[in-house]
Amino acid sequence: MSDGGLLVPDSVEGQALRFKRIGVAFGPRFFVLLAIGLTWIGPAFFEPRFLYGLAVWDGLVFVAWAIDLWRLPAPGQIRMRRTWLAPAALSVESRVRLTLENRSGVTVRANVVDNVPHQLLVEPPTVTLLAGPHGEADADYPIRPRERGEARLGDLYLRLQSPMRLAEQWARVPLAQTVITYPNLDEARRESVFLVRSRQIDIERRSKRLRGVGRSFESLREYRDGDEIRDICWTASARRGKLVTRLFEIEKSQTIWIVIDTGRLMRTHVSGVTKLDRAVNAALSLAQVALLSGDRVGILAYGRRIGHRLPAARGGRHLRQIIEHLATVEADEWEADHLQAAGRLWSDQKRRSLVVWMTDMADTAMTPEVVQAASQLMSRHLVLFVVIGQPDLARVALERPEQVAGMYRSAAAQEVVHRRDVLLARLRGRGALALEASAGLSPAVVNAYLEVKQRNRL
Image (tube, rainbow, N blue to C red; front, top):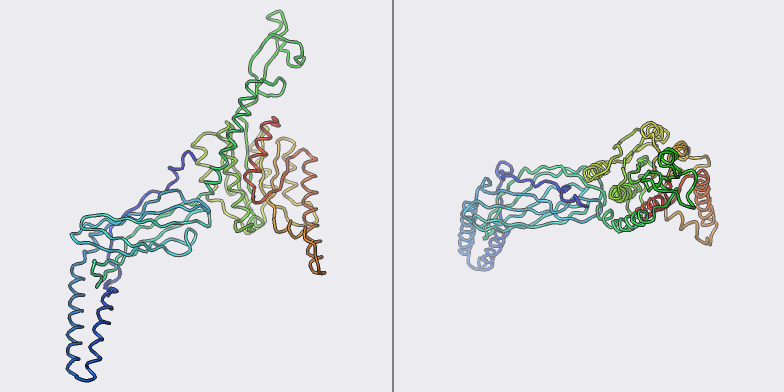
């Protein structure tokens, strides 16, 4: 993404505070020294005076622990900083850096636990930092977000030790921070190869100047044999005393509306990713390609109510707004109101546009409401109806059952697949574009968009 750096969360830093009222403990080497002192117990079976040696040894260990604790710096002399090295994106591994600033005159060893929510990482990460006197140390840990949207990180928890590691002091650094997990930015970046193709199409059309195909007026020239009569400009011909023809070019600023269904059907998982997440990733890929091709892109995400609506616009700033809106799109637990979404789009978009409607259809004998809603828009807009398929359903439909139960499963799956094919064919018969895809949703949607541009369907 061109503005990927702007999506990186801000760095936060803070000063360590004492954790709990006492906030001190014994380090690992303290218990090792106590275990060594147990060797005095063997000789004590023969001579009880060796028990005094054990007591003296344990007393020296406790004195060493107290000295080590006294030499530890106060929590106020420790500062921590959390730095994001990349944006948090769905299913994309990125790294977070923790930096310790030691303002004391002694070396500090710190075991740091970051309070990271489960949306970003399954278990809280732990790093170990060793900073010299008035020095710094840093370490990274990876995250791989599993959900989009806002995630709230909590405080850092420190166990401060000296190099002797006899005593340790507990501290807390208030670094609460809210970050946004964006859609899969890497997937959108991979789709940039399609930009080359779209630009080549545009260059070819400019050079050929296909007559009668474009919708945007470009210039006038003298009439030639083969020009269509309907393209003659009669007013200009009257002024010049000879026939003059209008030349047209492909319209460069067309409107693309991406409509995303966030109803309960979109909560289904396909290969570990929800259908809604696949739709959001495909929407981001399409938006990037369309914006860089010069088109205007709008977003409409709906469930029971209209959740997100971003008017159609173009430019790099608008792309970032699209990313921010898509990051917070959440699935609804209820059936989506498709007719309401169609009515809202009908009233907002008066001019003809390309409507890319990404949804799923309920497996019922009746015509799904989403098909009826999309059909209402076809008289004004070109509708690209995208159904997110279920690969396991297709596999069951192709199975050769060996038992009666398998036969019924296969027959039911074939019926569902056939019903979907019939509904998509019915939409195509009404003039819509319809496709079904699952794993390769983003390339399929982008290719369909480029096909529309190539054939000038708008």
